Image (cartoon, rainbow, N blue to C red; front, side, top):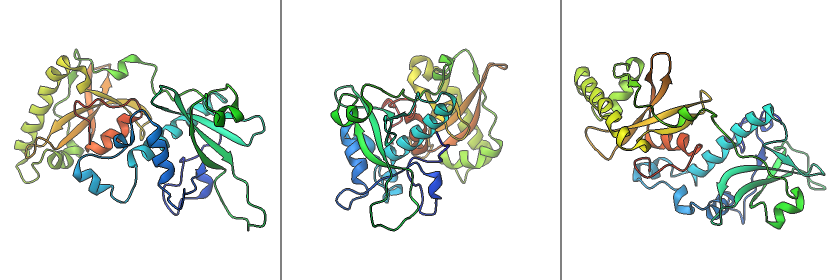
Length: 292
């Protein structure tokens, strides 16, 4: 498997050889292929839209940003895994004209949704042009005739992100570093809703927010949400905190476990949409707090 950079083209000037597949519009609508996938999922279409107005506004020019992000980063993870274990995460048809991978999503009947692609073939009489290697043809369950006609009973494995169960749960016997903000401090002031307050006021507010987190996690382990941080290709955890000026304005600390010191260190601070994108790769986030 070639080391593609993205599943679909991410921007107009992206080199074609970095892109795995092209997605043709349906009835002239380039968003309709994603709408079809969203409607198939057990989550339903609404789950792939933002609910808070500030995120609706932020992504107003992009349809189904949650789904696009999920599919793209799931694909990138599968490419990395396929290079380690060829033939396990991508399955080709016997004639080499079709390829599929497991999206990790399921339909309403609990069946996996397999993304199917046909090898790009220029139409007779059409001028040659640079295109991605594959063309997206939709998502189908393994029992569907559209799937079995090309792949039989073969199925690709879903992406995995960690074999260490400790990566998924916050260990409340560990401490949480409450004094490491340094390069994050300006961002922390903004996320805390205190951009114009003295630094010491902000530090006290953030220390208090961190101090209250472990008791909350002891009462509800789902407060700490596992994520695969794509930039560093590793598992970490998200811990929420509210803005002092608006309790409904939630951001979160991204923390990393340090086993040698039995502590969690703050790596960065995410806005809620960024947090959702990272968490959705692992599982459907619970509605306890991560619901942008």
